Image (cartoon, rainbow, N blue to C red; front, side):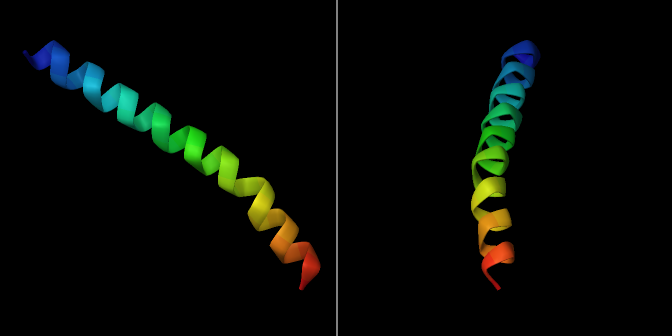
Length: 34
């Protein structure tokens, strides 16, 4: 069960990393537009 929790956390961390990577280009674009 602890292993399942670690796996779930790893998946959530990966999803957060993907979301951050997806947001980065948009943020850079917004910053350059200012």
